[in-house]
Image (tube, rainbow, N blue to C red; front, side, top):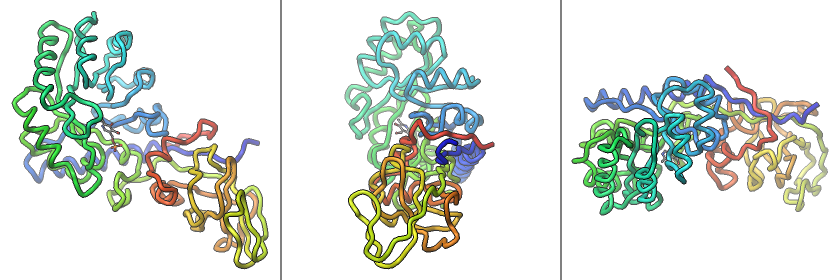
Length: 375
Ligand SMILES: Cc1ncc(COP(=O)(O)O)c(C=O)c1O
């Protein structure tokens, strides 16, 4: 018998979330008399831990898929995805361009060295590029001063037959907080609005809170790039995913494998971090940090046992964690436990209790956890 821990990925929840974002964009566009942008569903990092093949199935109605790794792009093609694929960091060395060419991938171009490599490349067909502006995040992208010359070079490559369409792209640093996107959007507009080509802005936070800039700005977005919201988690600290009509796509579940009866004063787990102040029952659950559950989740982190909310107690260990069985007196060995997802707390609640974000927990699901795909 395998350990009882497992994750379920719901393809229908992925499709539901994509449809919810689509509806939101369509409604925003209709209200602003603008055009609804297309969606690049962001599926980097193994589709935020959900699996590339599951993402290809769940996001079959997306207009495009965006990711980082060439091997994930190839897996999308092998899983039957024939639509556009955007590599969000572009390519890293000239030999990558062979696969870009063979699998008909679009690439982000964010630095001079990539233009140099493209100039030397011999491709069988034109490659569509998104030329990235660093509008203030200072991670990837040409500076506002360097962007016009980079665009000219890209146009030259277009005239020479190497480059197909040249899009304009930027990434927001603060769409999830009070600072918002207006400063970066102003930089983006001022640098790019006279240049031709499709525009791509907006991660999940900007898509959910600032979609009007994507549909009605002087530089109307043709593509948005939501990631986390499509998996049913929230990009915001102050709003949960359910408030946007999103459903969790990953559910992490296990079972109680042992029960301990504690007397007042007894402790449990490494470091004796939790001490019972009265007689109580605790359940030992087959799930630990080697499964991807966060070690920093503190006593009080929500967990559901037989569908009833209770709390984690003590320190999470490599293969096990401990839960308070007070609210579930009938629970015993074999009782189902939901760590996060459909029938448990949200991944964002667990992340908050562990001092991190849902993104990290979803991406960190350990390879040893078997994943089942739900229709
Ligand atoms: C360039 C780019 N676009 C879009 C996204 C999607 O972001 P999110 O998952 O917050 O929607 C990311 C993720 O980091 C990204 O790097």
